Length: 198
Image (cartoon, rainbow, N blue to C red):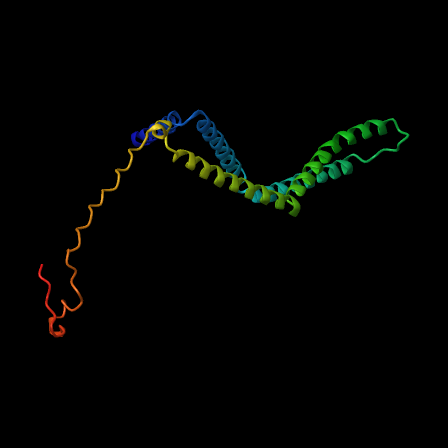
């Protein structure tokens, strides 16, 4: 528990120190990307098993509708419709209207759940999931890029100039008396050739 609390303080301190090192514009972008990340994560977490939930909701609404329909039929058998010219018919019609309301509500709920579990609705759900996944990836990458930017203080630091290249020393002068090609091969010296001195 203590380690978890310490880790939480470190995580809370890091963004605070990071935001203090960023410029106002960079901090605004950081908060905007953080908001987009939180939005995408919340949506993906809420709709992680949305397809299974919609299928289960459709079946549950169907059972409720069937139950209400069965109750209405049972009531009709217990309370048969009187002849319409009898005074009791007006009371019977009013009671029938009250008994029909739950069935109408259950039927509307079932049709809505059925539409949400149909193929077009599931395809739209898949497209929205892909959209949120891409939003999470892009916002995470953008926030990481902001975190790696140098701080404003580091941007103002001027790096030292590179030292100038060393001055090349002049090459030594060549000998005053150039050696001929015959001087390198004494054996091949022609008759009368004298090796230069120096």
